[in-house]
Length: 71
Image (cartoon, rainbow, N blue to C red; front, side, top):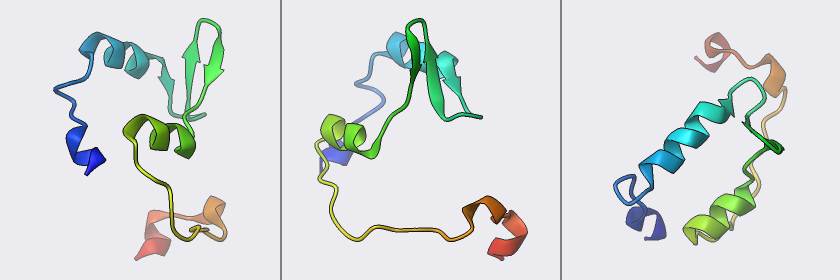
């Protein structure tokens, strides 16, 4: 339910745009004036008020994963 309450329409568009411009997909971090910052699962849980429960999911040989190996 908390995830449904979150909406891009409620967000600060300027703030979101600033973060989008600073996102570095090769390192999965934000490059900010004071250094690099990443978002953790705990951050998402606290911001969206979504409990993190359940079993851990692990992927073996993630580095060798390709689209062809998925099919």
